[in-house]
Length: 268
Picture 1 (cartoon, rainbow, N blue to C red):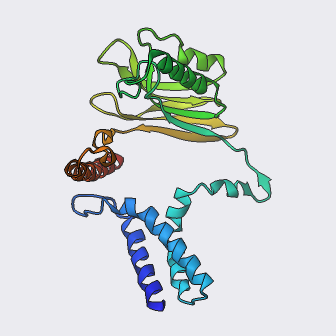
Picture 2 (cartoon, rainbow, N blue to C red; picture 1 turned 90 degrees about the horizontal axis):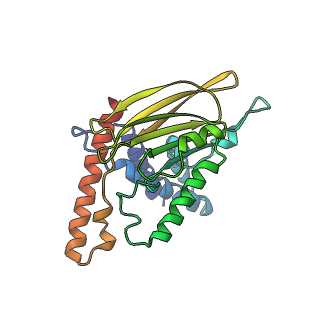
Picture 3 (cartoon, rainbow, N blue to C red; picture 1 turned 90 degrees about the vertical axis):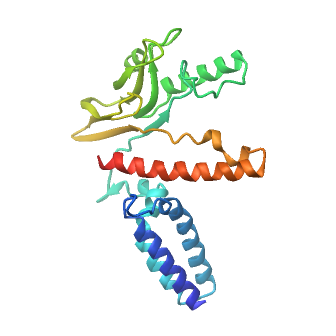
């Protein structure tokens, strides 16, 4: 058990260390970030097993878990436990992040393709009501369509009626005269706003809004990067083993390419 815990701790340490290296063609470590959550889970399981068995070598696992704790805290929402500082209570701000690919007009993804019109209209109406009536202080939306033919609700006007400020960054749709982009909606005043990046196709972009909350200013960044488009290659929906194997290769290739592309966009 001693050598097992030491070897496992060494392996976990290596995985956590490699996770700090940005993925690139030179350092072909694109799969590491997908392995880290599994490593964290195994690290905790092995540590608990060692404690139950009263093995001193479990200390190796505890040390390496502390080393990788930054991944743990970024995976599990524990920051709310530290809202108090020096005995004082800080205001808690709620933030909503949501991709609105199902809003009226955003049906190109085909998610309503095989349902009746009544079912589709009911789902879309429910989504509009949720967006307009949720209580989040700050809301970030991607694939936000505005001004499309047949649109019954002016979403931006409704935000204003409810006392919210917003920043809507968009480009004109290629299919009609509507606007399509991302939106940052805030219950607090927006002091400054702008775009960090807009793709050539106008579909993907990164925008920000500086929001005044009391004496402080909070910068909120809304990001909509290009999808890896893997839905059509889901191995679980393959009709034959050969198709399943091929789809696994396609998914892995898309993951690899996507990790490199997103890393490059982040660096730029």
